[in-house]
Image (cartoon, rainbow, N blue to C red; front, side):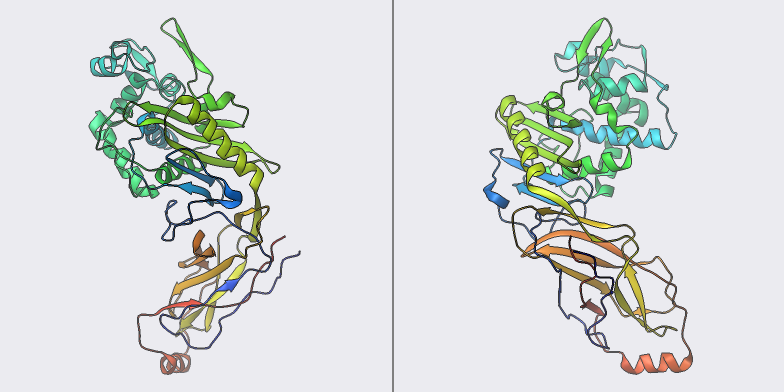
Length: 424
């Protein structure tokens, strides 16, 4: 069906604090559950997913990388040690320094005795086998840390970027807070066992989405085939890369008291969509691989991307107090997409909220509202809305009229209107 070009308007002339209403999107469809800041959600979906899918992993989540739509979750906020999945945050911090020019791929860092002892050959764990007190380029360290999981490479990057691992860990935690990882604390750059180092499946999906979207030039590091270093040839340790599901990152890990973890991204389906899957606490490597493949395959087969609103298209109007115009348009900066089930006929509800009335003068491109998409009690997507025009201060007569219409209260209200677009 073609999109309805008519924008919806306010239902009622004067603002009413605490008023609630909804926009019902024409066309019935079903969406995955829960999305908010980062990938958090105030409303949790039911444990069982569309079509009866259920993961056997203790904790899991499946997210559409482009829209942030959560397609499936199970115990997604359960705290767990990340194991080597912590290295994805190590990568995020290093990628940031590369993208801002603070370091370069040919920058060399020396392998400290501590990095060699705790993370290199003497440690008995995954290692690049870099030689102590020898320089290694950042480019080679990226492969060593994120393709083969070398702890010596991860520690050398941390010490080189932060001056010490402890300073680098502070950068990791600052980044986690900045991107919306609400239930994560990092204690080291490697994923070594530490009961105080905890994260969740939801937070790890948030991290993966941040890395994929923010650092597209460096993300391919995770899919490098391996490295020959110090006369030792090692292949990429991520089994998902060769599992025939379109995976191109990110990390797998294991801890004795935790189990097997995986943070995977893959491209597949008829529309070449990218999904992010997290599997935590699997009992064996085989179970981890099978559950991750099953989750991704189900996502590609069960969902398709639907366009709700085009970028910059006015989706609502917000009341303006004392302005030359009585209202101003609200729009998302880019197109709004969601992932819809191919089989369900459930309808979707959209709600626009803003703190108002706005007080003139109002500047164009000011974030003042939110478009929230829900299915039943499950929040699917939240998109910030921005003003579409400048609204200067109005005449004295206009301000006097608006003053007479003002109601008392905290100014929180919902707007109601018609559908801007119909789903195809």
